Length: 473
Image (cartoon, rainbow, N blue to C red):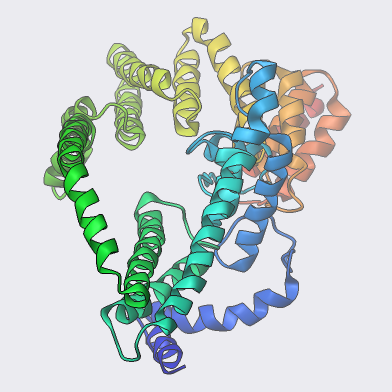
């Protein structure tokens, strides 16, 4: 009880910085009372994910739905689909399937974990994985109960085993509570499984100590010592072999993976303090060459290429602009071979093809259409992407598809935000298809959806052009 009181005081202490930051801890404590009554729905009706209980409940609900559908972003053999419930999506694959069941989001947040360890195991390792976790937890719980019984059977007094119990069991309880809402990163999970191992180890030590105390059998001790001496050489040789193999495997992974990625991060860190070097393609190129599988570096390098291409285009250097945008596109195409389902990669490739088509290279039009169709299919809970796809389809004459995409984005407005660009794309396409009356109604609505947004402004401009044409005719 004293520890709980101290913890509450520490939590409530202002963290420094601005006034809003100082009040953040207190507001979080008070917000618990506000969130509990609403339960499974938000008072504002929004489905946008956010921190706190409501955000986690929304995520849990979506992951539970995923555990009944097992949708994946690529076609697969029917046998593999049949085995999904048993074996799950695969480690770290939740991020690719979550958009199929996640509620519509205004932003492009990628949900790569379930904020609950058991649900995360269910989604990524299936019902067999969850069953194994439950069995392990039950074993550890049974051992924890038996540890207390064994400790009581020993002579009275504070022993080393008692101290170990007082350290390990409360820590394990705290960790098990934490993982119910935490992030299942390796750094977080390592301590939980280390505590599992510690419980098993303490149980065995106490069991041996209790047995020796009760029996007091010298012959049994001699027999144990004899058994150890006979098997000692075998254990020693086996240990050496295992240690050598493990060391080789560790060094190979460390040098071939961790050290190389660390080198890329170190190279960036050494230059990013310089405001000029931070936007230097050469700095990012070197980092990307050291760790080409790191999406954050590859995507940032592509964005630098795209920005440089736009700059060159604005100066009239079209050849240089094309060279730069294609260099960035080639980077993404190479990364796509490593991870074909990464959202930022697909967005970048679609934007690169769109840029080339805008500059008059018509051979990229089909690629941009295919890319945006893929984006809409893979990320159905991202109306901002769907609205952008509708605008692009309308710009390049694919009006039926533009209307379809716009309707999908508009359907999420009740729980996200107004999507004026989707309304604009729909109105423009309707007008160009000759459905003028419908187009005018849709464009009028678009001007009321977030009036300061680009979609609303472009709708006003198009309406002015239409009325001007009607007046002149």
